[in-house]
Length: 256
Image (cartoon, rainbow, N blue to C red; front, side, top):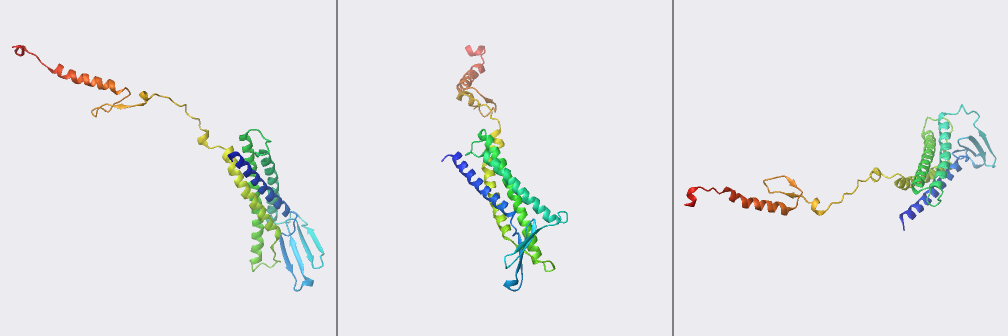
């Protein structure tokens, strides 16, 4: 199987994972069961209290329930405002991440060249990663507050427990983070080449075997020469033959 085909299947799997995680995160916003509390000694008089980012609700065993939105926005604590902002940011960034990933994937062929599509997919994967991170912070922060108040012996107000919406949000955030991480790796590897691969290559030099060789003179000399050995061997042999000839001295008595 070709590498491009493998990457295409990986992109499809990561996109489906991120899309499912984004849907799960979106489903938690209108859900009331972020926190719940059960008050009562017997079944017939039990009352259930539950709330989310937007409202407080109460229901009894007869099936009658009543919900009330928070009356004042400015009177809410900073914690609730921060959770709202993070949850909405998670939904918004997940939407744009899905659009960018759908445009840049190899199976859609909507974009231009392979490099441009990989970069668009990389941007969508980063947007999905931001969406999953915002969702994870929101649900973890909310759950930490609920657990801390429940275990605090000095907390006198009504104590709540973690609702089902928080667990669903955790699952969706994990899908977003895992899918976007794999998608970021593959798209970044193709769309953002390393500096070594982008470095211009030097032109290749072609040389014959004669010019590539280096020859050394005898041990008395350390100079490197680039000529063939026969030339220097012949020169050395002529010098050795000429040395005794030039060293002879003649005088008058030699011929007597």
